[in-house]
Image (cartoon, rainbow, N blue to C red; front, side):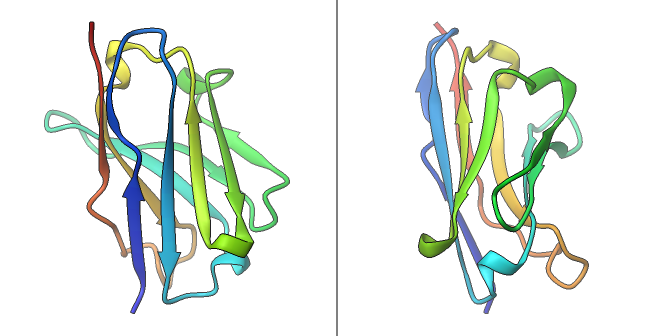
Length: 117
């Protein structure tokens, strides 16, 4: 079955960096665009960015442009989110998602990122 397992979250100080990973299984990972989202208890899930199936092109929401970078390793079936210059408002649970209508309802447990001094 389709599985998405996020990892790499933790506590980081403002201005710090963190890299999240998402391991995908049960589907042809390299055939699909992939997305990152984030969510906290008091707001709806928010799209962060999307990377194409080859890893050549990524698009981002304005608030993370220049700070976050999405990459992927199709040989390892793994998606990454590299986050720099983190701010307290980046505190959230982060999720990966498959950008296709057949699979977009699959979600992992997410990984918690907390930005605090």
